[in-house]
Length: 60
Image 1 (cartoon, rainbow, N blue to C red):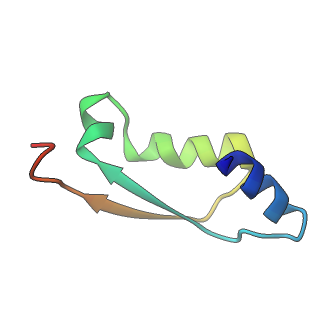
Image 2: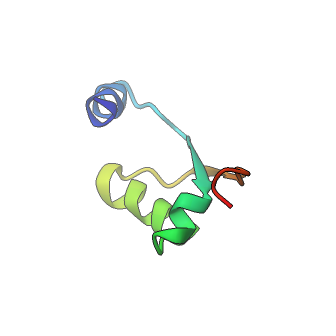
């Protein structure tokens, strides 16, 4: 669903920027923040990424 929405938006030259949330889940599963950036570029050719770091007490 998200992929379809991004692809639909790209037909009208959007999105120009993607906001991603980097959490303890990513860290625990061996993902670096640069992996998220690489994913969005490889999958959608989106270069502008706004990364938000979030640490949940429950994830600690």
